[in-house]
Length: 125
Picture 1 (cartoon, rainbow, N blue to C red):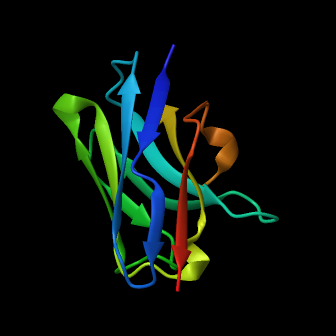
Picture 2: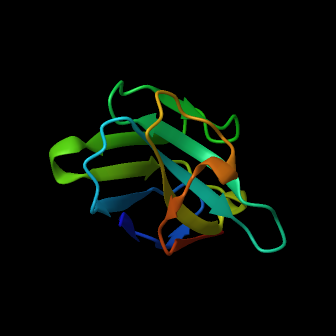
């Protein structure tokens, strides 16, 4: 059973930075897409950044391009989300998710079978 454990959330001021981490336990898949999604109160869950574990290919939502960076430390089974120039609209519960046995990443929530519990990021002025 795959388990994803996020950490690194908290409060930050506008323009600040935060790094989220997600440690994956219990899988040995190489063909897996690891993703960060977020959900703000009253809004749908949306994809933020994706990375394919085997190819290293990354994708970003337009709203975070140039500000957020997704990366992985493969040996540690860890994926990171470096968030810079944070804005109030980035306030949300951030989730790590895994889509296993795939050669490409998608933005579809339904493709991700495994989810972490979420970590809250709050950006205030």
